[in-house]
Length: 71
Image (cartoon, rainbow, N blue to C red):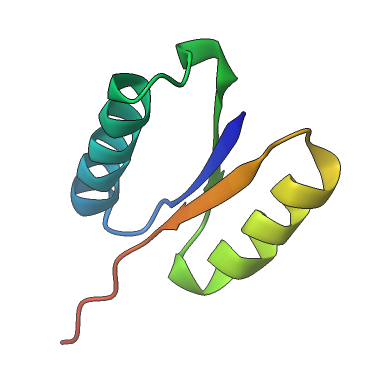
């Protein structure tokens, strides 16, 4: 099982990142039902969201996806 934590800020970019990660995991043999997606408000919350997902869910790994754009 793999958990993916996605920042809701800059969703056009973070959803594209999620789709790429999801498709790559499936391509390499991870079953769709073994991919857990959770959202956090922004990039700064990714580490806490990833930690909570790892501690409270039976996952083998966690992927954190976010985007910071200057300006």
